[in-house]
Structures are given as C-alpha cells and as structure tokens.
Image 1 (cartoon, rainbow, N blue to C red):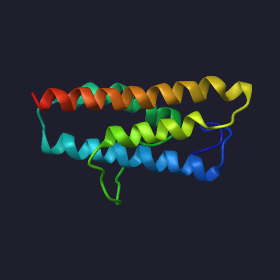
Image 2: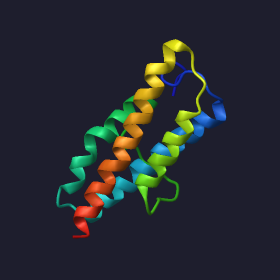
Image 3: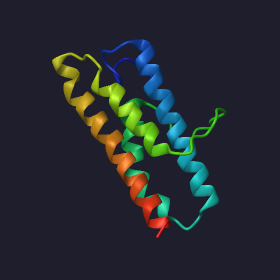
Image 4: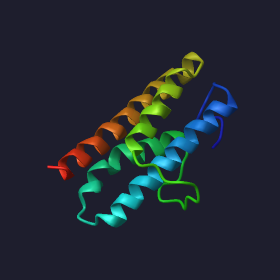
Amino acid sequence: MNNTMMPGGEDRTRTEVVDLVSRAEASVEALETREPNGSWAMTAFSRYRVCELVGVTPYAPYLGELADDPAALFDEAAGLVDRFEVSIEGLSWRLALADALRSAAKDIRMVADARDV
C-alpha cells in the first residue's frame, strides 16, 4: 500500500484497515469455494472497489485466521476509515472508501440472508 492510496491517518490504523479488508476478502473467498453456486459473485463489485481504494490485491493468498463474518470486518474497517484525518484533497477518497466498505458489508449480508431462506 502506498500513501497515495491511503492519505492521512496513522500508519497503524491504515495497516489495520488493510488487514481487516484482507481477512474479509479471504473469508468470502473461502465461502465461494464451499458454496460454488455463484451467489457470492453478487458481492464482487463492491469488494473489488474496496480492494482498489485500499490497494489490496483481490484473491491474494491469506495465511491468517479466517473470519466467521466478513461483513463485520468490512464494517469495522469503515469505522476506522471514518476517523482518518485527511486533507481536503483526500476527503473524497476517504468518503468513497467508507462507502465501498459499507456497500461490501451490505452485499455480503444480502447474499448470506438469501442463502438462509
């Protein structure tokens, strides 16, 4: 991740956001593998948008522990992004990222709820 992708904020907080996004992505990928019916494809656009804004490579190998609720990870990351202190030039990026994170969480919940019906 470079500083142009994530302006302002503390490095530790930015690293946390990247970790949360990476964990959420890996968790959804695991769900896609276990449930190959294609429904998780409905989450692809919002998740890809997050990855682009954060600078995370989608479908990159993840060696950490997977989450039970990737939507909660995206929501947690959005809360951290809301607290980023950015310059006026970085404000639209911060708002776009927070929106993308919340959209990804919403899409994941929508697919999960549809599976449960």
